[in-house]
Image 1 (cartoon, one colour):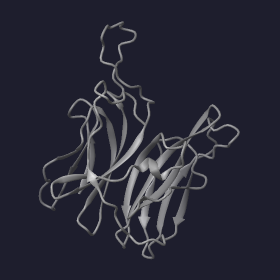
Image 2 (tube, rainbow, N blue to C red):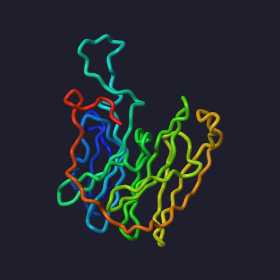
Image 3 (cartoon, rainbow, N blue to C red):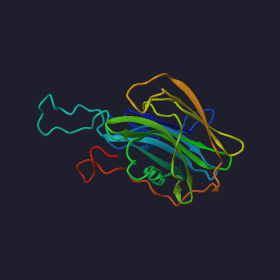
Image 4 (cartoon, rainbow, N blue to C red):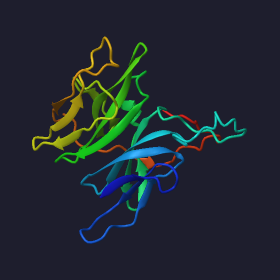
Length: 239
């Protein structure tokens, strides 16, 4: 299975397809609203579900808002640095099912601005999710690496990886170990708390997350519903 984003509809959308070694299957729409939907990741579990994670941004993300053109009744868009959220859905039997809200894995007051998600499954069929989260220290902003896994009760509280403060656009890799633990390779630029805007030196770190005590399980899933259109009860710049 392959999850990818595409600009075929005039904005970033997420699709799913398969490859049987001979030919590529049809493209299956996963997230195709007018909100920004990109940075897709895919993983499969033994129950036959194909899980897709992606990053969602604002309505008409990055579109010219027409401010300098002084256009009246212009269709408003959202800026490049607008809010971000991570979403996960399962594809099975020709239908999309929504996983619990990923923001619930974060503490109250820190549930906005999650991005760049990655999925992994381990030998027990447990679904792991890693993502970047934006934090604020006064007027300073920086991003950290966080990891959680799915349980019968939803996403476990996310754990922040040590020394992961840096920019949002970094590359990370995960590997499920034979003992049920998870290895994550990630980068850091050594920013100090005194000035998170100033990178120091890039280096690579590897963290090991122990095998969870809870059994691999999935909560009851609901039908996946796309976000409401802006101007129709929805928000322009969602978190």
